[in-house]
Image (cartoon, rainbow, N blue to C red):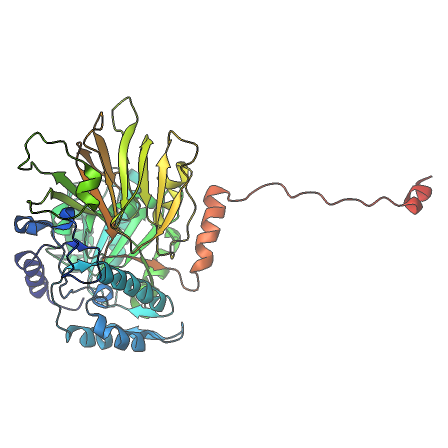
Length: 484
């Protein structure tokens, strides 16, 4: 995070210029003779790929090289009262040579394990971050939240701060009369050039690495932050100004104290699991009008033929991926796969694949289980299944799920990614869902970790709230005689 803006831009350019495609292999060895057609991605799909590169973000740099993980653990294995200096660990990390690789089943499991171990270690220390560029995210159409954003911006740009922060707010606020950027600069001339404006392209393209993200709003605003940063997510500190508050942990009325403590003493970070979903489109085969079977193509033996599917968009999500019937008046028909196995055919309004964070969202409404966000699992829940026996299931995060529309389906299905991007799936298309190597870095209040989630579901969902059962008043003969 301490690199110059120029070096950050060079890193961002390298990510795209050197990107290579990935494939998912379900065997332990890459040279195995049993391979899956759908896992083979043509070379022209490089833009949709994921590459292991050195990152400017300290938290995510800890995931770059598993050989260094032991050394990192040495730095991190400290009591909760200790503080890890970013430079000490970052120097050790940068010396590792990152390299591109294909994602095998074994490597996917190692990656998921590494994220869990890192999250466990980070929960016991405070990270002292070198914050220079601060990203502020709020609802640009909410009058009260615009005023809140203005207050925090003024505080960060004040000459009373120990550091000269560069503050980025949404581009739409530049000419907003409520935000009044002109008066901020007029009242504080020293802030000239330090109030800047971000656009979606700056976040999605990773052209610039922000050091710290502040959200003002509810859980939806936090989800928007996750959506904007499709790969590397800076630490996100969320002030509770919304309706529920599963992800918003800080009281806005205390923001000067909260931010001062975070910048001077460090922060405690929890890494929340995110999913990566890729839309795979069916390709025409040399067989022409030959009847095709999606199950055979995804889990059958490899044949001497060109690949059956090609990627058409990839998204990283924090809550859930939903495949449903969309505008169709009839229920959808989908096939569910896990690794190299066909799990089941689903006749329902849809199917919800949720992260532990998303267990309290659509998954909950569909009858799925509540799940603590630190659990390394994938939650699968049918939406209004046309059967009495489809129960929600919980799978390990090392499984690669695929939800597809069979070739003989009556209608198309629609895939929704965190409720933002919505894509039509035609017969033969499917979505691949797996754990992302870019978790969501969520800043937590000091001393509150596991118990914080329990208190949040009690507060927001009234979990297990009922009137206490009355005790018996035991009857005795002596008591009856005394009453007489």
